[in-house]
Each structure stands twice: as structure tokens, then as C-alpha cells.
Length: 265
Picture (cartoon, rainbow, N blue to C red):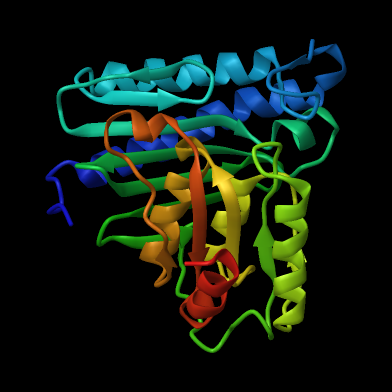
């Protein structure tokens, strides 16, 4: 685990300020989404718009203006290497499908790695005006209120979030649902993995599992969950692995063993 960098509180404050500014831009687009030209990427469910690109450009510009030597990985524009040991990991609008379809389940996700470990996590949900923020050894908050997970909650007395996409087979997703229900749990999926990870940190969900997810979707949420007292399955961050997908699991203490079993870990 890396030691606390001297300027980590300043980086956390910057991430919150950027997320709020980016959220305002995204919310403006959301409120006039009928004017957006929607494009598809891998399949018809994997969509992107000018809003995603403009918001990421804004986030990158603000970060590099303050920390020119930092690296940045964003969903829309890829990896720009740095020399400081810090790499920002950004999803400008996580939950683009809900976004373009008029649902509020989307967010701005800004994470920060230091020596490969998530050390800052900021997730801002503009439609709810909710700012989730956390930093290594600094705890996690929701709109300034400290988040602390309840160890008595598990998959049987709380709700679990799951994610699915075209990277995994329908049979795989069906088996996850079957195993979770058989174990006495229940689930939701709201279309934004990053936001559901924030909900784990806030205790709204007891855990989140997605068998294939990208770094920009999960690393901010990982930091939040850890700082709230939870656990996460380490995401590979070495070299090119950072740009590839991997299984993502984050849970409150009482759900660790059950979700590990469901994921086959």
C-alpha cells in the first residue's frame, strides 16, 4: 500500500471541483438530450454522444492544468501516460444508456491511482446532487457526511447490485442471478456500475459484482468502498492491463464470502 502522498487532499479537492463542473455540463446536455446525436460502439446497447466526449475533454483539461505530469485514462480518449506515479481514471458519463433514455441513473466518475492503488475516488450524480468522495486513509463521504458500512448486512438481509454487458454470455449472467437468488439474496441493476459501487460505499447496496468491467467504471468506486470499511477484488493496473476489462467485486464486510463464492473466487 503506498504511503499517503503529501498533496493527496489537494487532489481529492480538485477531483470534487472538476466532477461538479463536469456534472453541470453533462446535466445541461441531459436536459436537452433530444438534440444529441447518439452513436454506437461495440453493439447497439453500447452508446456514446458528444456529451461524453465534451465532458471528458473538460476533465482532462482541468487535471492537466493542475498536474501536468500525471497520467490520465479515460473511456473516450484512452491512456495518456505521465511521469508522476499518479494516473487519473475517468468515466465522463457512466450510465450513458440511462442518460440518453432520460433516466437519472448516471454519474461522473473520477478515480486516481498511485503506484497502481486507488487513492482517490469521486463519483458525482448530478440528477440527485450527490457527491461521493473518498481518499486513502481519509475516509469516504456523501455530501460531506461520513460513510461507515454496517458489518451486520449481508446478501440475505440487503440488496446486491449486479452488472452485465456483451462481454459476457447471457448464460453467465443467468448463473449469477440464479446463484444469488439461491443463496437467499436479491439484486438490482440500474445501468451505471460506478453509481452502484457508490451505493455500496453508502450502504444502499451490500455489494456489487460484474464479471467484466473497465477501470474507468470501477476504480473511483473501489476507493470509496474501501474507505467506508468495505472490501474489493483487486483490479489489474500493471501496464496495458489497466486498459483491459476484469472482474469487479466490491462488498460490505458481511457479504465478502458470499459474493466471492458466487464469483468463483
